[in-house]
Length: 76
Image (cartoon, rainbow, N blue to C red; front, side, top):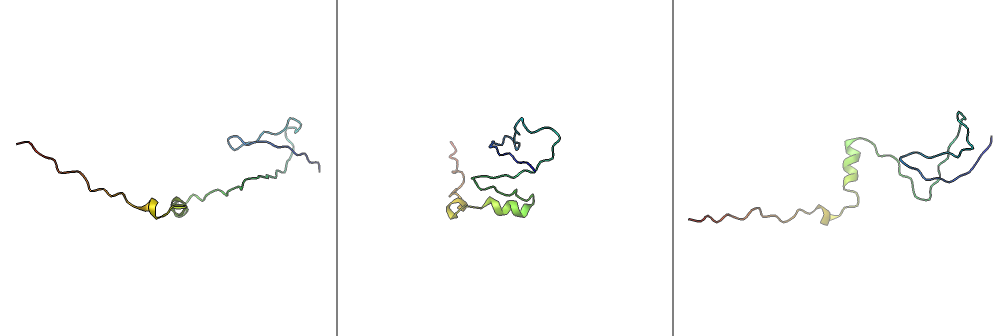
């Protein structure tokens, strides 16, 4: 087994391999990142609703004090 090490930046969920890697070669890829990698969110409603309020506090959830429209004054 042979190994090379290179650094790259992903673009639209793809990475570009160095030109020295020939086509059709079986590769094993190990991703290392300084930033934490998040796992993909489940595509179900329960998970979506649970993540919507993540990081919110009571001030974010408070309803605005709206008293509706003022009563119109009619000219007689």
